[in-house]
Image (cartoon, rainbow, N blue to C red; front, side, top):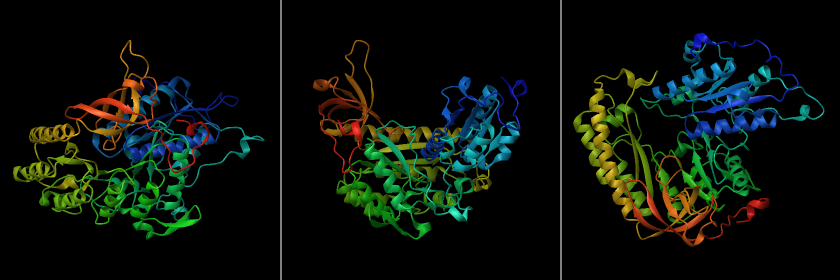
Amino acid sequence: MSEGDLTLTIADGPVPGTANQTKKVGFISLGCPKALVDSERILTQLRAEGYEVAPSYEDAHAVIVNTCGFITPAVEESLSAIGEALDATGRVIVTGCLGERPEKILERHPKVAAITGSEAVDDVMGHVRELLPIETGAFTGLLPVAAPGMRPEREATRHGDVFAPSVKLTPRHYAYVKIAEGCNHTCAFCIIPKLRGRQVSRDAGAVLYEAYRLIAGGTKELMIISQDTSAYGVDVRYRESEFQGGQIRAHLTDLAEKLGEMGAWVRMHYVYPYPHVEKIVELMAAGKILPYLDVPLQHASPRILRLMRRPGAGKQLDTIRRWREICPELVIRSTFIVGFPGETEEDFQELLTFLEEARLDRVGAFPYSDVDEADANKLPDAVPEGVKQERLARFMEIAQRISAEKLAEKVGHVLDVIIDEFNDDEGDLPGTRLIGRTKGDAPGIDGQVYLYAGDFVGQVKIGDIVRARIEDSDEYDLYGEVVERPEWRPNVPLLGHFGKH
């Protein structure tokens, strides 16, 4: 249905005919893991205030769309989702990164009920209450309202922590934990600081209490995320906060060490190569946290890195070598941009040479595309689209070969694998074939391990961490068989049935 065919219109007041009904809100979550955490917080508050989450448009009285606004394809996906929700329900609240640019939303969809920016739980809930008021009574009058956000412009709550979500959009055995919001960098291709503001870090105590609760509830893997994880705490001058009767600094090394003591897998994402990251790698070598770093390097040519306004131009290879000397098991994933304005064939060859020498374990690459309001749009010497695609193909051919070579080295070894799903064929006994990940694989972006359960058919559950013998590999994935199913015992008391393996 086109926008001109809409038969539903937005009411100025509450939705009619729902006074005595359970209020149901549909939810669409788009974008990166950082946005997913924001979605979990909104869903948690919806549940806390007595709303139900609708499984389909047909059941929804209104829909919340948490948008992405970083690159052009993501913007189009968000605008399309908003239009679909409007067609289906007529009442849509838009939040997230694209919400920071309301004019772009209103240009396409002038009938949205409300628009808020990113990490705006309280604003979203205010609009939900206006559209779908819940009658207060002896019990509903005691329901909590949304916790304050930690947007920089709200000075009264600038350092107040956003509540930890209890509704998760990930499986029970892994979770994303956001330690900071916003970014202080001014990369030429990025508008995240314009969308989400400058960096605002959570207190370490609040992060640790969230992690403790997650692990106590059965979570076995924590993905630590922010826009610049290495800069965690710099905005609050690494101030101390309380955790279990002691004080802990808001510094990445202190936080990582304490998280590592809880006994779950701890995985670091979006880590810039600052000097103190060596201390994090030392914790990996000691087995405290997973030997895995997600480092968005973006390029290797010093000239292009300067045009991009990226830190550490020309020093990546030396840094990677030092990290691997400290922790030979370290797995490094990174992303790169090819075809950035001004990139010459010589610059691109520097990138390919770096790729061969660095031999990164997990690599993604994207052809450059303009982002509205990004400074890079004004740079001269745009690279033709055909050249971008040709360079991307050359880049990925090398990356794929290196990945295949590195995975082949794991054949014959026994590795820890966390199980994400079953992969049974028709006729198999339940739990015969499994899909999981090693310590070097993050969910959704890295490779997988395809396992035969062997002697453990029917015994392995989703979320279990097993030992598996690797028998084969290809460009991105591993194949093997379960040889052991050890009991998982974190250093956190497990709640109820979660303590039973």
